[in-house]
Amino acid sequence: MEIKQAVIETDHLSYCFRGGEKVLDDINLSVPAGSIYGFLGPNGAGKTTTLRLLLGLLRCENPGIRLFGHQLHTSRIEIMRRTGSLIEQPSLYLHLTGQENLEVFRRAYDCPKSRAEKVLSITGLSNAAHKKVKAYSLGMKQRLSIAVALLHDPELLIMDEPTNGLDPNGIIEIRELIRDLSQNQGKTVLVSSHLLTEVEKLATHVGIIHQGRLLFQGTLAGLQNLQRQQSLLEIEVDKLTRAEQILSTHFQVLPKHGFAVQVVCPDADQAALINYMLVSGGVRVSRLGVAGNDLEKLFLQIISA
Amino acid sequence: MKTRFLANTWAEFIKTKRSFALWLTVLAAAFIPAINAFILLERPEILLTKFEQTPWLTFCRFNWKNVAAVILPMYIILITNLVVQIEFRNNTWKQIYASPRSFADIFFSKLLVIQFLVPCYIICFDCFVILSGLLVHSINASYKLVIESIDWKNLLLISSRIYLGSLAISVIQYWLSLRFRNFVIPLGFGLGLWITGIILMDWDKSIYYPYVYSAFMFFINFDKEPAKLIVLLVSSITALVLALIASFFDISRLAEKG
Image (cartoon, rainbow over all chains, first blue to last red; front, side, top):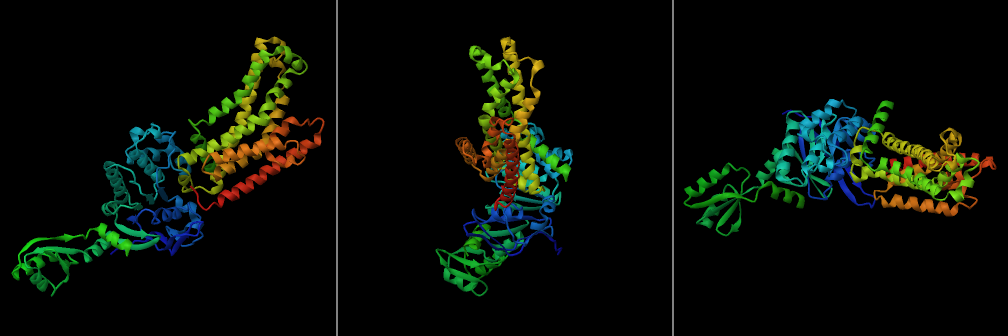
C-alpha cells in the first residue's frame, strides 16, 4: 500500500480561548496528500477553531502545526501560497462583481489574469462574472468563494462546511466540484462538516472530533470496517429459543427482542450462513436484516463514548 | 516585495469602488463652500467690507475655519470607519489574513487608501472653494474674487498644515476601526474624542491632544506666535509616529484575526 506524506499535521494541538476554556485538546491531525479528508463533528466540536488555527487566523504559539512539512508560525506566507481556503460563510465583497472580487484576490495571490477566467469556468460562473455578488444566490456565492480559493492553483484546499445552507442541488454541485478537484487535479482537500452523510459521500479519509478531542482518524474504509464490526443482524423467526441455541455456537447473540433475535455480525456476508444454519436447524426465518448499524449510529456511538 | 505591496494597495482601491467613500469625499468637500457661497450672496451688506483687503485669503479662511475644526475631523472619522467596515461587513478579514500577505502589507495598504482619500478631500475642498469664489464673483462682482488674484500660496500653506495636523487622528481612528467590529464603537469614540478636544481647546496642555491639532493649525496666528508652529509640527509628527507604532503592534497581536 502506498504511504502518502501528510500535507497537514498537528502535534498534540491544544487551544484555549481567552476565558481559559479548552476548545481543542491534544489533536493529532494527519491529512494525507491527495486525500479528501472529511473533518466531522457536531456543532461546537472544535472544527472551525482547528481550521482557523491551520490558517493562522488564531494566534497560537504551538509549534506543532505543520503544513507541507513547514511549521506554520515560521513559514505562514510560504504555506498560504500553496493553500486555498473557505472558512464558514462566503468572504466576498458584495458591492463588487464576481470578476472584481477575483481581481482583488488575484493581486494578493500574485497570479496571472488568465487564472480568474479559468476558476470562473471551473466553478461554472463565467456567465455571472459581471454581475454584482449581492445578486448571486447562496450557491453562486459559495462557488465564487471556491473560485477565490482556487485562484492561485493551490495544492491544498481547506473548506469549512462548504455546503452549509445550500439546497440539495447546490450540495450536489459543490460535492462534485470537490471530488473533481481531488481526482482530476490532484488537490488535497480538508473539508469540515457536521453531516456524516455528506462526508460519507465525499471523503477518502475521516477525522471525528467531539468536545475538542479527535475521537477517530483514518480512512473511510476503516470507519466502515469499524461500523461492520459493530453491526447487528435482526432475524425474525418462529422459534426464538431454538434460534438462539443454533446461533450462539458461532455468534454473539443479544437478548431477545420481541419475535426477533439480534446477532452481532462483523461481516455482512455471514447473513447467508446464518440463514442456512437456522433453516437447517428447523427454524423458519421470516425476515433478516441489518439493524441500526449505519454510520450515523456509529458516529453517535463514537461521540457519546 | 515593493511590487506586491503596490498591487495589494491597488486591490484596496478596487474595494472602495461603488462604495460611499468617493461620494462622501466629494459631498463633504462641497458642503461648506456651497453654504458659504450662499451666505456671501445673501449678506453682501455685512460681508463685503471684510473682503475688501484680501478677498481670496479672507474667503479661504472663511471656508477653512469650519472645516479645520469640525468637518475634517468628522470626515476622517467617517471615511476611516467606512473603509475598514468594507471588510467587516463582507466577512472578508479572514480571507485577507489567510492570503500570502504579511501583516505589515495588510495594515499599511489599507492605511494608504485612507491617506489617499484625506488629501483628495482637501484638494476637492480647495477646488470647491475656488469654484464657489468664482461663482460668487460672477454673480456679485463687488467681492473681487477673480481668478487672477487667487492666493495659491496661502491656500496651499493652510491646506498642508491642516492635513499634517489631521494625520494622527486618521491613524488613531484607523486603529479604533480595526479594533472593533461594531462600527458604532469607533464612531462613538471618535466623536467623543473630538468633542473633548473642542472642550479642551483653551486648556494649556491641549497641545498633547491630537484631536485639536488640525483646528490649532488653522486658528493659531503663526505670524504672531511662530514658536507655536514648531511645537505643533513636532507634536503632530510625534503623535502620528506613536499612533502608528501602537496601532501596528496592538492589531498585529490580536488573538483572533478575521
